[in-house]
Image (cartoon, rainbow over all chains, first blue to last red):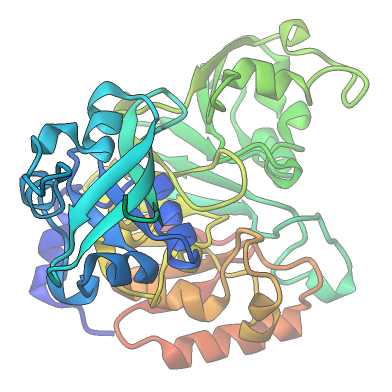
Length: 147
Length: 277
């Protein structure tokens, strides 16, 4: 039953550890059980979860990579032009969805971390709480035939 | 502050010879601050006796509702301070489209209840559960949404140098891949972090829980795991299943205590008082 000094320090005042909103916690639970590749980002746009199906699509293991900042993931998985050039990260559908707080659906070309180019279709949604506050967003990806 | 349990049962009031010691009334907890401020946490059937015990000279009582399931609001219409002059403030979660008043009026109106809120003698003020910490009397109160079906909040209450977290209906394991895992992904972590007293859902045995995933409740072993994750000092198992007898709760409590390595565990009984000052 012994309590550490550190525990007593915690009790001194209410502190947060930036626990994520329960809506995101439950979205991760949902995404973790889906066969559809899915990204989950927090309100800052940082990538907080990638499900197993998306790991295969992106050529990464999320357990190894961990959470990724908005700047890093939009660069790493930036849309590519038909010529393979990197598009402006701000135009990534999920970035648009949470910045403009509207759903976005359309084609997306990416280059996975495994070096394999993929043509996808993405649906990105902002997630808003019961008071209308932005909680984060999610994107679901489907592979499409390369043109 | 002093915390008193007036109802510890979950889901359905269950008085009878098998539930005498732990009690059959549903969720109702009173907190009294050193300055006499009174909070009533939830309004289950235990609230009738709570209200009867409040001195008629008390001018204000604040009721903090975690959610509007029947076992948490059924005592509202029998709360003595509503039927005399004074103020009763009711705090509880709004939904995405309806405020607390609209949601609560569905119960406190015919045909479910004969008396309407507007007909009560007290001045009744309804507040949507706050997004930011608020001061209520001598209490600092934080409300946050937690995992349970429908809009549901838990509360963290701090006063007189002590803290209480109240999460009577909570299924933190639902959103966790490996429970208990990292705090960032654990519902209720911020509310309960480091509190002196954690009143937490421990409704099920592990066997019961396995067939009731998604119902919004925890097993007593999950309650212990959550309490240790948040580094609470003492855990009160709460929201006892209506089918659990005193003997079964004795057994569950003994097993919970055996599992607990860093936290003191008790099972909440009607009439229990905790002096946290």
